[in-house]
Image 1 (tube, helix red, strand yellow):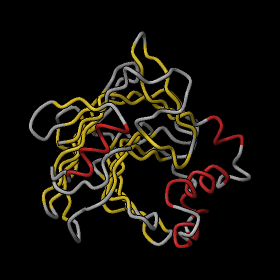
Image 2 (cartoon, rainbow, N blue to C red; image 1 turned 30 degrees about the vertical axis):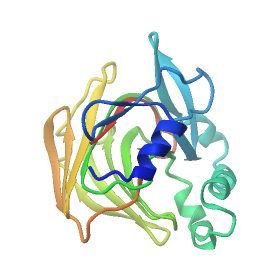
Image 3 (cartoon, rainbow, N blue to C red; image 1 turned 60 degrees about the vertical axis):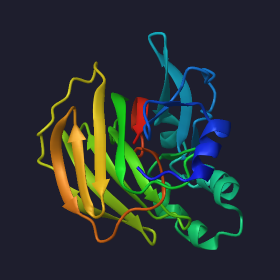
Length: 237
């Protein structure tokens, strides 16, 4: 992973990240306040709070508030996007309506991820329409992004792109390839080297794809509509 000096300084000041090696960083949730908005991640769409699984703090995306405001799903996005990107970013604002159906939270303190690995642990908690957990990456100032996700209703992994206000499928993994126990934690991992992309579930390769160009942008957490999931052990290297 290529990390700029500015990113390292920001990571040290803005959020608690534990160094696991020369270039490996893990988000530390131990000092987060339960029931509050996380400091490690900046929510852009959806309801993201710090919860507990047993005695351990986790990041939770809560899909229930999304259901209650389906008639106006862009409200949180408008408010948070203005804070995160600035009120003058009209191109981002143009994408609001489509963007609002995919809850995301951006990792604070790391302004650019290129080649490397991003992994996290997730647990599916609920969701009537969707039960999705994912890694967000290649986030651009105009709101474009890529995401690799596990879908508990399809039991597979997939790679999606969001560009110019439209979400498009890049590749589906095999349906029902990963029927996971919802009571347990599972690992979702992505690796990217140049244009070579791979996605993994619990150490098993589930998807390979050749990107049109190398990635360069912010990273974070991804979900869909009313999904409720727990996340922890977010590692970048």
